[in-house]
Length: 335
Ligand code: SD4
Image 1 (cartoon, protein in one colour):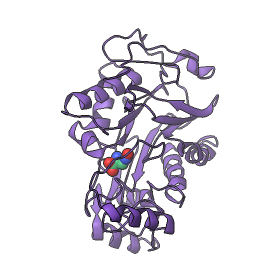
Image 2 (image 1 turned 45 degrees about the vertical axis):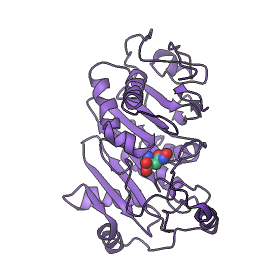
Image 3 (image 1 turned 90 degrees about the horizontal axis):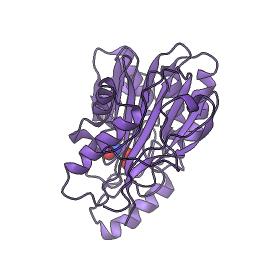
Image 4 (image 1 turned 60 degrees about the vertical axis):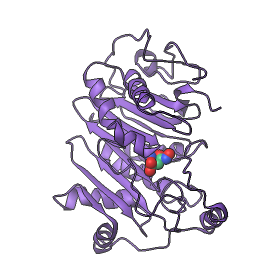
């Protein structure tokens, strides 16, 4: 394992961050074995929104529009990730997402609020904004998840438009892939991926959302972690929230996001909790070749952390002081 990091340095990411445990930064390094992390100081940094990858910057803008006017975290995360879903240039979420190996764009999404209410859709086709369908599942049904054709029928019944989500660019990429049809789903070595978003609003309420087109060229019907409450996303207002990006199978095996939140409940900082779950994932796999997974955690005070198996993961942060990208700490460099 190359470039293993050995300590955490806290650094200032704006005035408020000086007082918090926000431990991700390009200059910061970490491991779960040794750390000099200090106790959490409840700064109540709110409102705040954090989301995965570069595309999180635009998504955060939409979320901030709502948060900065006193709107709810739930509305903010839905509006935020819808931006990424509707961006045809983004090839890993919503419209323009890379298809499965048979050429179908199939989408997974979930949303969760401060009351532990949640909704999800899995293996949904033809709907540009699956996060909004997930919210309808949460609000208009007694259920948590709808999948496949049933989810599509529900969405159409709720007035969502049916449309072709396979853009020319994604189709060309798929046709190129078909030439080899090499079934080796590799994700995350590039700097764009699933969007997971966590927010706290002015009133202190927490919500999260997660949405993806999943692994490119996957087997038709494959569902990842992103629509699974506890895997791709988890919110518990007593503690905080977490979301995941990367190889969904590895996240599901460790109940990743729920585990991050539980570790925070036991007293770990958001950063320590992310590091611990990343290391559990590493430990449980014989090989971590191409096994990128990254977590973001946000505690109820607005302290955040982020950590990944490999370098390259970053998060977008927006609060009253800051609007920027923050590099996650990590365990390994790509070979
Ligand atoms: C999945 N976790 O479907 C999602 C996709 C992702 O990096 O985040 N890819 O497994």
